[in-house]
Image (cartoon, one colour):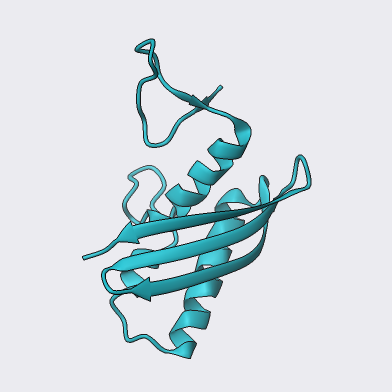
Length: 119
């Protein structure tokens, strides 16, 4: 059984589960929005994406952000997914991320979209 993220309880009062597709999406979200140094036992885990939001927006930064996020996803989830593309957009006080990937076990293409308020 895969544990749902964020941790929660189901209707029976037990730990909520997630199917494989949802679990992989949850793992991607954790990598995207965890900053390196945030986890005690895995100090390099995460993408650093949230720190990049506060830098000046330009094409060079956008390309660097995509590469940083894609590298983090490959490092931490490379055994589960093959990342095809990453799009990151900062608009007002929100961050939008779209990740296209192939699930290695099923060879199924997926696209996941995430939004996070920053600041």
